[in-house]
Length: 210
Image (cartoon, rainbow, N blue to C red; front, side, top):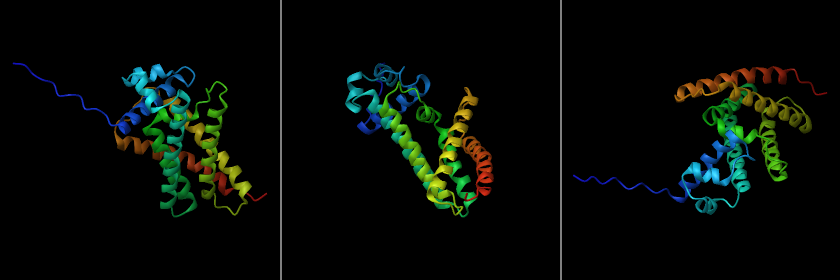
């Protein structure tokens, strides 16, 4: 008896683009920007290089789109958490909770975002700084301490640095640990948010206008 296998379902253009972004994010996170080639991405995604170039003109374009995509998710998560918060402290903790849930669910994207292995490429360096600036502006409203704009943004920049440093420390400590259960991921993110928000809130309460 002859059996006929079902034909493989072809991906739509949007699905293929999403797949390529996901594969590339994993490779950039693992190997760094300089050590990853478009050949590597095509091979890992199981596509031809011409097909990859149909979606992205160059490795730089691919990387920049990934950075923008991650930044967009972070900013949306922080904005959503801010809308639900009823107090200053709750704003900080909920925003960090939303941020760390993204981290726990997608380590590779954050390794990519915070990677500085750009080989001196100024466009990539500027892209990372734009993300940091956008985060500072998003965090600024969380600081409700009667401070002037320059002072608030100075503190917001410090908070962004703390979040980045703690994220990288957490990623390094995980090794091969995988949190497959969504409940476990949510619990991990909530714990990270409580720990960092306690430190941030204690510092913000002690801020003076000087």
